[in-house]
Image 1 (spheres, rainbow, N blue to C red):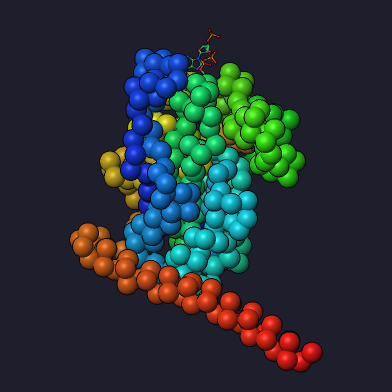
Image 2 (image 1 turned 60 degrees about the horizontal axis):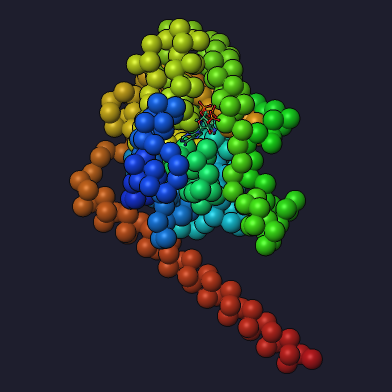
Amino acid sequence: MARYAHIVGWGMAVPQRVVTNHELAQFVDTSDEWIVTRTGIRERRVAGPQESVATLSIAAAEEALAVAGISPRDVDLILVATATPEHLFPATACLVQDALGASKAGAFDLLAACSGFIYALHMAAAAIRAGTHDIALVIGAETFSRIVNWRDRETCVLFGDGAGAVVLKGSEALGGVLASMIRADGSGGELLILPAGGSRMPISEAVVRDSCHFIRMNGREVFRFATRVMEKATREVVAQAGLCLEDVDLIVPHQANIRIIETAAKGLGLPMDRFFVNIDRYGNTSAASIPIALCEAVQQERLKPGDTVVMVAFGAGLTWAAAVVQWGMPLARPRPPWLERLARITRYLPAQLHSRTMRLWRRFDARMSRLLQREGE
Ligand code: UT7
């Protein structure tokens, strides 16, 4: 019997701190007028010292699980799509797994930059369809504020921080992820690159002096690439789902530049009100942009159960991806905020205690085995 991967929960988390264009114009040679007309961005969120890609991922995941009414213990796969992981390793997904107490989940990060969330959705849906997994948490999370050069006006005005998550659940009922595609063209890798910090160019004094630990981007070329693939990928995935553009209720595009979205709308012959746009408030949050936009589309009742939504993204790699989803139902009934807070404390406190106990146990175990070894010598 055919299996389908349904979206049954969603959540988002953004840092508290808002940085407006006017604030940016105080320390870099730019203006609100330039940023708004060239990109559509008015403000973005920037992570504070206590916030990180893991804390944002965890908060978004907790919300998504609450909407789904699913216990973290039932999750069997956690994917975090991010280009700004907490560390190169361990994977941010493992930190999320530990914080949630998702004791039977496999967890790993996926790097496809701004296309990452759709890549992760594609892989998780495939695992669910294949029957190897039943409940997957798919997260897109970024803290680009930590890798942009705040003196480079060509990049620092564009990006923002945040996270979004969805819960996918296997079912025999037709629906959920109806079609998806992922693509790459590595020949354009240098157009959008973080040169240092990997094994090719480890961090050194010279690297820092030459600012190689910050993003480098050929904005014009990325723009040209984006306008080409957004329309093409949308048409391709809609056809793959056996649908036509008129059947699509909402398109949730990667929020990189309003002009890219407008060009895609024009190419597809669709009005702008068929596209969800929140770039004005968050800027480009890379892998987080689509799941954040999905959550806000639900909040604003632009996306309702049964609607057909297309997600489409492009990014470093170069990568691009698209998916057609029949939007699902939250499985849990909404609770009053105080009850939700209480439920979260009781749900996640044992996970924290378990994590600490495991760390202590590991130290104790290592010491005991050293002692026993010495006694045996
Ligand atoms: O998720 C994928 C991530 N990347 C993207 O999506 C980027 C795609 N590209 C873009 O969105 C656009 O190319 C940008 C927004 C990055 C740039 O817009 P543009 O219309 O392509 O501008 P441009 O690069 O052609 O630059 C035009 C002028 C230049 O000055 P000159 O050489 O004409 O004197 C830039 O130096 O604008 C200047 N400029 C700025 N001026 C004020 C570039 N950045 C700024 C700035 N403020 N922040």
